[in-house]
Length: 416
Image (cartoon, rainbow, N blue to C red):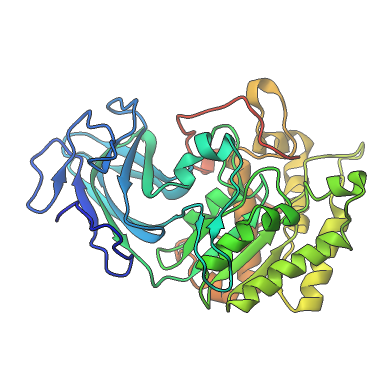
């Protein structure tokens, strides 16, 4: 299959990208052999990201013709050696749990990757323009989230990939996420969020498009045109999951807003915009921060914002996931000491707002628990092999197989 894609080709008619043959053996007819050391360049349109070491985690990037949803199918394993591979996409979105294969054994896995551009088309009543990205954060560290390509991270104890095929999947329903640093795709270890873990809980029959960003509020979502971007690409039957609150709190001190006034009004603006294009809004109350009193009870810090979320959801007859309540149950179950292991602690500096991979997985599981209870049409797309999750009895960290990504930072995400 040709890798040359005609300029302006739409997702609906685009040919598959690949298949790319990464194994050392001879590529089969129709596949493109990717030679060791073949770094990505724009002219070729595919290749490894710098720093590939045999047997170590690595990145592979392939251009796609336009933004939208793509079905990625990977063949994992190695002809000569045992392999253990985990797959993430774009900014550390967990796609494939650990797959262990014996020498000569190969396993295929498919998943959906959403690709987006900052360009805003004049559709659905939205004026043309661009998302006001945060520089340099979104233009450097998070650039993979906004380019016309799919970047795959192959991680694990011994990652081995034989083949990669990327196909357009324009007909799938999409769950759009909007929120703050506890939701967005964090680009560097040790920080992580529930939005980038949510992908692994779903079968390849629905897409997750994470448009959340660190340090933001409902007001920022409107002002930076993130909501406009979502509306411009949404279709009837899509979903808008929204979770803000942590940064909206600062408006009280600044005298520019409050939970039952501006916060509630801006939430309603998001609901109306989604409904206007036939999408289904879902309110997620802000997950709690980690804090305990002298008696070991969880100290609430976002009670008014959780209450405002609940009130707006009831008044507007919108599906409501009470993540605030679920996260408090989770932290109480872990306890003051053990709960620290679910939060980032770069260089020993404990962060009580932002999670690490383990904590983000637990919060994502809480969201999934809420989806099962309140959004059955989305729950229908969950993986059939998921084990039950009870925040009162959370799994220990050793049971969650999310290896750290190669890229790390000492810079704390924006917001608190």
